[in-house]
Image (cartoon, rainbow, N blue to C red):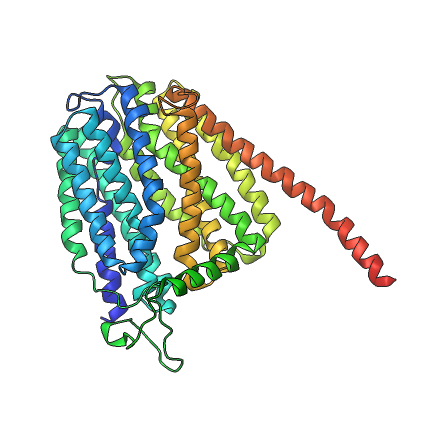
Length: 439
């Protein structure tokens, strides 16, 4: 087995274990059940928002620290944070403890960036696509198996929601232990950056390839960060797709965080829930459409055509969410949410690939980190506006999802309007230019 394949295998096992959290499809039912002394309103308005605020507050710092400490320590931190989160899930019951849990959950999510950027520092760039594909497949497999097991054991009464959290805790402990097996990274993108010798073909960046005098100054890192930032965001295509990416991240995180509360209200206390089955189906279908997105013919990926398609899909996502929100039938709500999730998986894959085409390989982590950060800041504003008990509106759960639904419709319509204006102006400019040339 070649060096990069060994690293890919270790990362795949780590990703599988990290995503194997069978408690997550029923986390809302667990928190509002007899195991915790909190109400539904407290979970929605006082617990979940802390996770959003914690995530966005830590992401930028974690990104820079990750690069400075060369990835592996922060990957270990992610495992440790996950272990703390599920220890608090299992052995605490108060509102204050759950809010502390959400702070660690923010660390858990923010430190995930180390896992994805590790690839670009440890593996030669010609293997990026293969390794990324392997890891995404492994994480999707972990989610699918976790959701399938959670639904199976709950439906047949093999264990309860607390038992699912013990399983998740075991997986996070295994994740932490496995993280120590990752080989260290001798050089990073910015603070410990080095240029490989021009005639040397590097399969795997090992300890033997460390230069005798690596550049570690903050000034050089700042310059490189700025150059990558400027190079990406002076490209209008990158800006447009990045805006779309950030909005998609914002609403997807928000919807997936609170959808279980919506299902609980629709289904009532005595309804059999199929949350795990829905998540398993969505994971499987999302993987399929994400794979298919990679085979969209290039002739269909012109900027105007793509924006029109994305706008149409956004409107469909909005209607899917509206169907999931306004119905009194839980099955219909599941179908609407699944439609939204499948469309999201397709669009986020397509948009990510279009962004990647227009930026340098070395800036992948930075640009997608910034785009995610913008999405999380937007999610924070959205949370303050419609969710937080001390926020602006503090809507009930159906009111929140109504806002999300119409937001997608509004985004789709707005982009279509901008695109129409741009296309209408185009011929005029072209004709003017042609007239000038003839003169």
